[in-house]
Image (cartoon, rainbow, N blue to C red):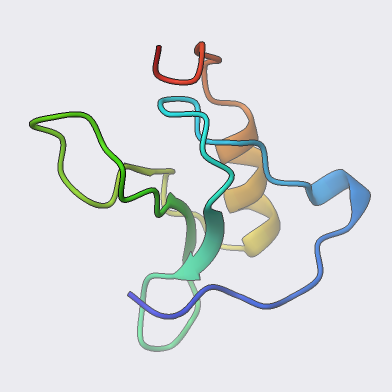
Length: 81
């Protein structure tokens, strides 16, 4: 997986925290060498026992904007509590 995209997000593209742990350590990553597909990933390393890293991944999408929209539509949780 590549490094997170450093593109500045617009107000409409603000990433919501992880729906599982509540972490704001989330970013948009390209998932192919050609950087033509993207997903949002939570990089919280303080996971619950038995959970693996990365903590959560959104679906793979064709654009950064679509990846952000898909991530933000995920079910809400009480921050993993």
